[in-house]
Each structure stands twice: as structure tokens, then as C-alpha cells.
Image 1 (cartoon, rainbow, N blue to C red):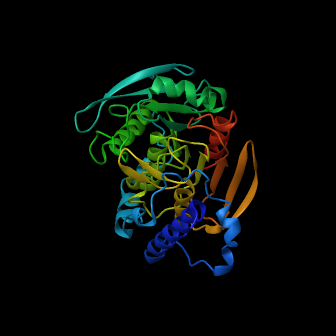
Image 2 (cartoon, one colour):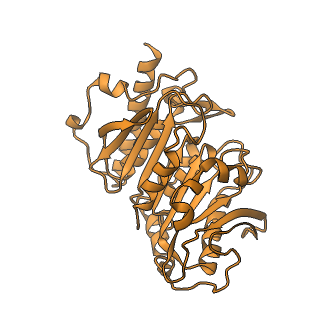
Length: 348
């Protein structure tokens, strides 16, 4: 059995387990066998970069949150959603400016984030918020430069937040140093702080991230659907905890990964002693949560790769495969525009 078929078999087995779990809690409807493509076609969607791909038994189904947990989250303080009309007439960061903000988490840990306020901010019009999560050991200042959101309309039309991970890491990865849930609480705290200073649109809060930060962007989409309207992940590290505890609610998602990524392989692998999901399996899992027909995608061109748009979804879900590019955010110059274009068209 060649390595390419092993990866396809791993993807098929994992998807069967995930599908059963999601079907069991009523998050998706049954798929028909006609929705599945021929074997050869499905194999073409897998990565050729499979040298360290985990075996089937190393890919357990993520644990899903119960319906009770989902209902409790969405019942909590419904006044938080939408526009509450509150703002500081003299905010600490003026429109068009960028500053580093120090804060203290609920558990007493000093933390920091960079805040950029779009030049078009006006209390007369609630502004969306974009979280941009850096990769492992990358500073928020560096990711501000690398992400190139400053070259997109987001720089003028949104409040962009670059949080800093503890010791340069985000939870879900094996090297993370924060306790379980610490980064989720940190994100909630930032949203509340920004909301007190500015008139923001709580229905248009977005998350994007690179590598370890892409894993966190995916995770907040899973566990915080009452906060985020859409998420985007680039070259994301999908360690098992990043897909665990997902809430049963539609979450638009864009997932971009390169087959030439030697750090986080497209076909999955083991890094820092922990296994991570293949990029396409992680995208398929999110598509299942969104009620998509996972084996039915519309395929179109993308610079240096292909775009797969899942069909029949309750929330838009896309996977973009870029060929033979390294582990970087800018796998193609269009990526920041692609990410913001996707995110900005969604609202809760």
C-alpha cells in the first residue's frame, strides 16, 4: 500500500468517525453514497507530502460539546450581541492609529495586545473587529507586518487586534504554557475592552491566524460561536485539542494550506511529540459541522493551487490548497485580501 493511498484511507476512516459523532448529536444530516466521488478523484485531494503522516489509529475523533453546553453558551447574556450603542468619546487609540495595550487576564496574568483602529472609525457606524493570531514564537509586531492586513480594506474599515500568546504560544499546541481555557478568556476580555472603548458591531467579530495562531482561530470558531461571525486559518497547526469541544452552531470558515509546507504538513504529521490532523481532514470536519456535503465540492482555480467550495452548507466553508509553497502566511500575495474578503462578507 503506497503512502498516498494510506493518507486517503486515513482521511476516509477519520471522516467516518467524525461523521458518526456529528450525526449522533444531530449536528449534520445523513450523506448519500452518491455524494462521494470516485476513489481516484478523492485521492487527488490529498497531499503528496506524507512522510510523517500519522497512522489511522493516531487520529481520534474530536470530542464535541453537548447540546446542553451549546444552549448554555447562547443563552448567556444575550445583550452582548449586536450593537449596544456604548463607546468612549475619547478612546485611548485614535482612528488611524496603532498602539500596544497592556491588560491583566481574569486569572491575574499580565497580557498584551496590539490594537489598530481603522481610519474610518466613527461612533455613528459600528465597526467590525478582526483578531489576527500570530504563529509560535512570532511577536504580534512581526505578525502585524507579515499578515499585510495593512494592505487590505480592513486597515481602514475595521478594528484589528493582534493579541500576544503566553511565551509566544496559543493553547491547543503541545508547547503552550497557559492553562486550559486561558486564551479563550483572554480573547473574551479583549472583546469586552474594545467594546467599552469603541462602538463595535458584535455581529461582525472575526478571527484569522497563522500556524499555531491558525489553530487558535479554528478553536475560537469551534468554542466561541456566540462571539465570532467567521474564521480563517492559514497553514494552521490542527493539533487534536484545537478541534475539541466544538459547539453545534454554523461557523463560516476559510482554510488555506500548502502542499509544500514542511513544518505543518498538508497530509498531517507529528510535531513536538503530538500528532496533528491533515489540513483537508480539519477542513472537512468544519464542513461537517456546517452541514455541508463533505464529498461534494465545487473546484475552481486559485493562484498556484485550487479552491474547494463545499456544497449544501448552512455556513460558507472553503478549503484552498496551494501547491509547493513553504510554511508562511503569504503563500501568495492575494492571501490577506482573500482572508479579509471572505471574513468581511459574513455577519451573525
